[in-house]
Image (cartoon, rainbow, N blue to C red; front, side, top):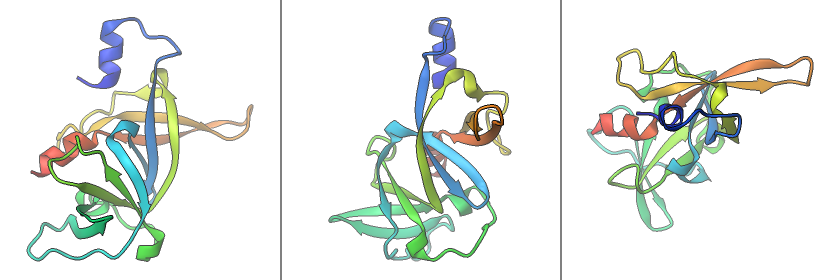
Length: 168
């Protein structure tokens, strides 16, 4: 059961029910994961490749003395690159220790913001995935632009815990 479902079942939710997410870009697409699944965001550094690892395992890094596995969400989600980015342009989102049994981070093109999203701005009609793995929690309808000329931008809300557990 998702966070949004839980809020809807436990009470009639109102405008005050919100979630916090970290929004990031991969290719031309915007994604978000729960803020509480993130330990920190760091600039990309040299990645040491692992021989015979899955294509979505970019390699490992030494993050302040801790070996951290870096997962390439672009490979895992089969997203085309929007542009050629150097390692210096990328960011690592280091996941909280409760997300995976080992220290894990994901590589993204850019981290754009931390959002507080009202539950009413989340469309759950799109839950699941193409393979029905169930890692999409919903679509966040983010309002952008000036008042009066605003439009909605869609952000795919990912259950990073489910996605990581499917890899094991």
